[in-house]
Length: 82
Image (cartoon, rainbow, N blue to C red; front, top):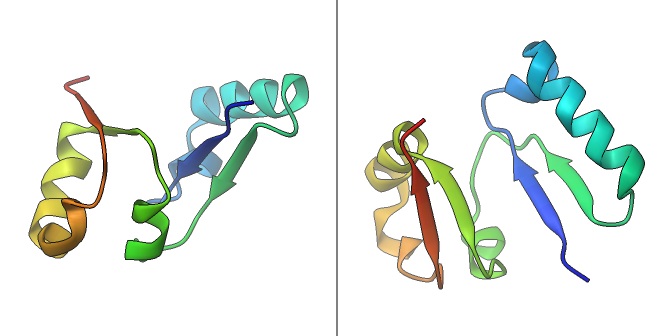
């Protein structure tokens, strides 16, 4: 089984209606496979556990500014423009 973890450091999953609805729908359909983490700080232990990181360009730039030293521990990254 795959597990999808949404890291929401900006609180968008609770303030954006479309995103919140999509997440709720996924959580209802796949309760064991979807989770949302709203930590404000991205920890290297969290990043190290990932097999794939899907991230927006804006968020990637922020991670590079703050956490570039340990980002190399992420095995695969897909950066989305929109």
